[in-house]
Image (tube, rainbow, N blue to C red):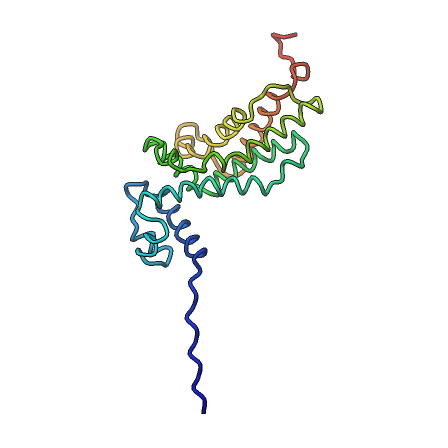
Length: 223
């Protein structure tokens, strides 16, 4: 009778463990801020041990930086999946605005992470070595959209893609980040239909800003 072969030990899936840790860290830091977040809670939520977190990420500060970096990675990844570089210029920008608004809604930890980092003085984001590289594909895509719009005679020349994205993000950020005070002060619903309408309004404003002067609607003062 032959001896039964011993089962091979289960191999640790490092990538899956890191993914669970980052997801748990994003939730913890977003809900409780940097000071309130606890490694114990992150370990429990991720189903890993504290030593594993320290092994993968180092201390709490480094885990926070990794979570902050991941928040940018995920929004940039979502933008790449839109394939806006192959759309007509106006369509591409409208899709980008809609995506940005919906990402802020569906990933509430993104706004919370940015708010936390700004309250902390923005030091951690400066320490992330590849943060500019993470943003560069988006800026290159917007530059391409603008160039196509100019070549087709739809957009005016000279618009900076970084400044344009700052405007897009600003128009989408405020209705989501300030939803509680907007409801209380202005009695607006801040539900999905209302946010969709804000995205369409923001798209109209962006397109109107980009159009050549001759193509812009004239108001009473300019007639």
